[in-house]
Image (cartoon, rainbow, N blue to C red; front, top):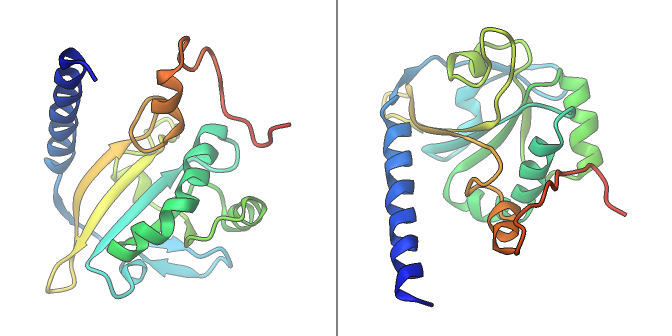
Length: 186
């Protein structure tokens, strides 16, 4: 590895630290949002922590987004590692039945809830006023008094560090070269 490459990697890590710090600026107590289980039953955000103090909630646009599917598929192998440190849940933008069918078709092993009719994604900035959804992740901490604190968030998009495909494609001569994810590959 060259000195120039090492210097760029150090710069990249420093920028990443600033991105994380910026995401933490929105730290605040949030309501115990009501989401929906895949059976349609109410699921309070507080219940998703299980026995953990920390929770990672992935904002997924739903079955209509191949990019969101790529990210969620990538979490399959990471899930046991993530769940050892923090609770982890995927919050689908689809109604419960659609989210259930799609998650089963993908074989996702992690907990999934629907945020379809909840203020959760809108309040956290992942559902815009025009009802456009954004994928990303919110990190929460359960305080001693049981209140829930949003402690960090970030958006997902091509090139981000949350999906291994993008940095790996970036190493190729022509980068992603117009590649887009698909639901199935031949």
